[in-house]
Structures are given as C-alpha cells and as structure tokens.
Length: 339
Length: 168
Image (tube, rainbow over all chains, first blue to last red; front, side, top):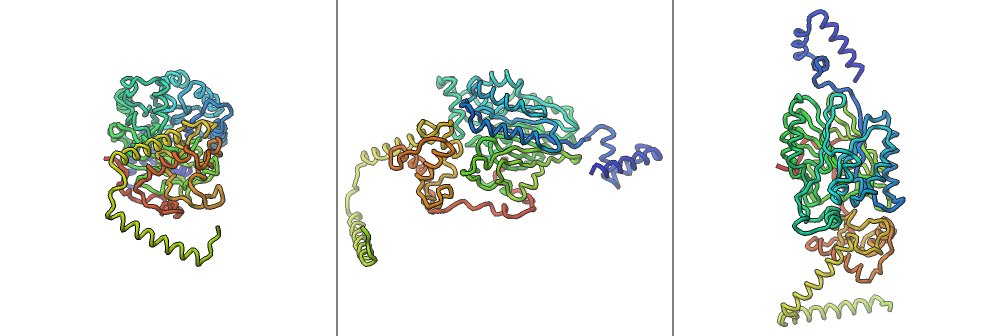
C-alpha cells in the first residue's frame, strides 16, 4: 500500500512539475482516485498516516488483595505491550473499579502504569457513583477529551450519567453505588452524555472537514442494543446527529464485555472484550449476528475476555482485531472487523 | 427397591388409572384453595423468589470469597435457563441438575462454599431463575445453537443489516 502510494506520489510530482497543479487535479478526479488521495494529502485534508492503538476495558478490580482480576489486567497490559507493531496509544473505556472505591482505582492506575504507550481513559459507572467521579477525576483528569492523531480526530465522552435517583430516595453513597453496580437494576434509569458534553462535542467537531475520520469512545454503545442492561446511550441519536456530517465515524465502547458490531448511517461501532468476565448476549436479534463470539466456557477462567487493537489505514477504515486471552472467536472474528 | 419390568408396567397402569380418576373427580370438585389461601401461597413464592434474587446478587457471603456473584455473569439469570436441566454439564462430566451447576459456579468462579443442595438457599436461587423463565417452553438438555453464520469462514458480515436492533 505504502509502496504504491509512494509511486503515485512520484508520478504526481512529476506531472505537477510539467502541467501545473490545477490541471492535474482535474485529470486526477476523472481518471485516478489514487492521485486524488495524494492531492488531498498535499493540501492537508484527509491525510492519514497509518497507525494503531489498543483498547483495554472493564477490569472491575475489587479491593481484595491479589484478586484474579488484578492478574487479568496485568496480563492485558503485557499483551498490549507485546503487540507488533507497537501501538501509538491505549484507550481504557471504563470500569477500572468494581465498587468505585479509591483503592480500586489506585490499584488499576498502578497496573496500567506498566503500559509502554500513553494512556487515555474514560469512566464507567462502576468508577463513578460512590463519590460522583471525585477520585476518578483526581487520578485520571477530565473525563471529556479530544485530540488529533495522524489525521484522525479522537473523542472521549462520559456516557454513564443518569438522572438523580438517590436524593429523593434518601440513599447513601454506598446505596447509590450498589444500585449502579447491578446491571439489570431498573432504578437508575437510562445513561447518557447529557447537555454539557453534547455542547462540547458540537464545538469540538464544528470546524473539522467532513472527510476527517472521527473515532468516538464511550463506555456504553451509541445505539439501542439492550436498554434494560444499559447497552445503550439515551442521547446517542443527538451524538449521531452532531457527527452526521462526517463521511465515517467509528464508535468504540466497553460495558458489553463481548464482541458486537453495528452500523447506523455513517457510524460503525464495535464492542470491546473485558478483562474481568464476559456478559452473555442479551435476548435480542442483532443486525449483525456474525459479530457474536462463541459462548464462553465457564470452566476456562480466561475465556471470553481480552483486549483489542485497532489499526487505521490510509482509507480511513479501522480494523478491529480482538486479542482474546483464550480463544472464543469465530473464524472471521479472528480475521478482524472493519469499522 | 428394585422393580422388575412386570412390576413397573403394573405400577404405571395403576398410576394411570389413579390419575384418570383424580382428573375426573377434579372436574366436579370445589376449588381446593380459597382466594386468600392462593394469595398467601403466591406471597410465599414471591418471598422465596426475592430471597433468591438477593442471593443471586451477592447477599449470601458463603457463596463467594472474591466478590463475584451469580449476577456478574448472569444478569436476569441470562444463560441460566433452569428448563434446560438436567443436562450434560462438561464441568462435572455428567448429566446433572441445575443445583449442581449452581454449586460448581459457587465453588469455582466465585471461590465460595457449596450450598446444601436441598437447603432453603438453593431453593431460593432456583425459584428466582425459574420465575424469570416462567412461560418459556421446557426443553431439557437444550443448549443455544451457535448463530448460523459463525461456522462460515471468511465471509464477513452480511451485506445488509436486518434492521432489527437498530434504533430509529
């Protein structure tokens, strides 16, 4: 790929020297898509230098010393460090802790400090609802962020914000936390990113040209997968509307502890494996049933868990490759999922 | 007592007659319980179901030493349909009832102490799972088939989504 691009570039530069840029551009649009790509690279629009990054998520660390999930997160760090080529950065998509306790977050931060690549983090509900993110923010900074990397725009949002269900009910911080810990708890209601982050996103992408590849990280999926388990984000339709102008948006999320893929309009999304335990697939039909891994084996304590690497190439497509601890992948999941 | 074939056939025949007679009688018999009694029985059942729900989500310290509860891997008792038991359980290498599977999960992934298979805690856990799966057809030994396309290699995703599971 890079060889042919280099040839095209030389070819283009040669032509440009003879005929002038405008003429070549007009010809290129008609006859050679490769040259159009080079042209956009020349003008700084839509140029992507291929790169990869990794996702680790949902470690659910307990306060118990030497817990098996500590080891699982350490294994994930080692697995990501061993990826070749090395990843440019790592994104952690939520739920470092199980009960939102500071010691659990500290333990997670310490294990994640073993990563060779820089780390970006967003929170999950298990990190948040004991102290409403105080400890998390103190350790990992702002939960809403964006940055550009080699031609791709990346955004992280906190998608686990619920309406206040605790004040009226007179719940303690611990009761609030344990309510949020139960996946099928009907009390807390749907999650979302809410107004302030929608405004952030709108401003953040306002000046970006439509051909900029955008990658958005949230804890929960940006589509209505299974709302009962909060496999959804209430204001995902508004997020998708804000991002509608882009040619292609990639949504990568945690929370579901399983492989799952979906595509809505310009947004394609993929779920991440956890390092703690796999959730079973909820009782709904998937638009892409092939994105399910095989049912995990409870006798194999590492089955259905792992990490993933995502490689972006010059076409702006990302290839998600699951790196399971034990192999529960179907043949074509092994080949990688284009997002 | 070991029954020979002849005795078994006779027993089944007698039982069949007994069921037939009882069935005919029940058509003309008064309802066996008053509404108040039925309400009380329902209340008793729901109390046990609720106890089971709490134990499923970690209320019984005997069941776990590492913080994990049934609900961590089985929200809404997912992948735990009691109607599929007894079935062959690979972990136990034999056909086993659900309570043996529950105890396996308690002892291994949850690192806890096995419950009395006939005790009230186990009854409560089973009652919770049965309650959530009420109305589902009974298929002992049934296990979920893999999605049809998981066996195809190299095909990738279907060209078009079915539309199901996609929000509006």
